[in-house]
Length: 186
Image (cartoon, rainbow, N blue to C red; front, side, top):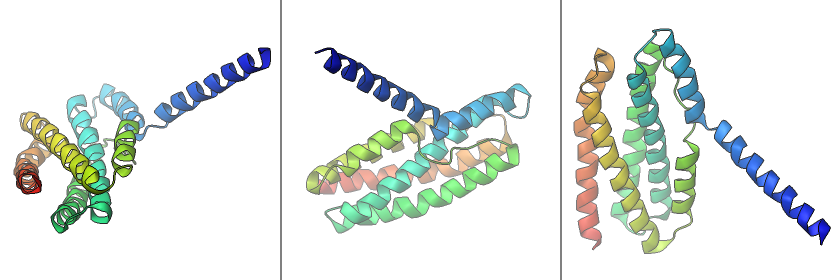
């Protein structure tokens, strides 16, 4: 009985430590921490850095979801939308990287721990369940992106502001195509 109790405590400790370690290794949190230090030195506006980190994380996630849709989607339209996401999110991410580099803003190397969890949930789905989950996740992502890009159009920095203004219609077009696709799936 005592051994079982000690064993359960040991297992609980291992789980807690592994959870804390995964959060410490969260690429987004690492970038955010680096940017807080840099913005404290006046290198850039923290809100602009937060925006670039957040949308870089989202671009990487959307591309990963798109690649999964290409492999697992049940219709050619889902697969085509997945291909669109892979291609266009990669282009957006390259522009984000150039802007961030020019401003000395750190970006995440990988998707955040939260997005990894969402990706795992999507990857666990098959057939129509996959399609429905993919469309739902994409809609949520793009609606959030439209809010974030709209806020960014008011930033002071010309590079970030100009990027947001130029790319907001692209993000809107992704949502519009997604809405058409969702209607066709019904």
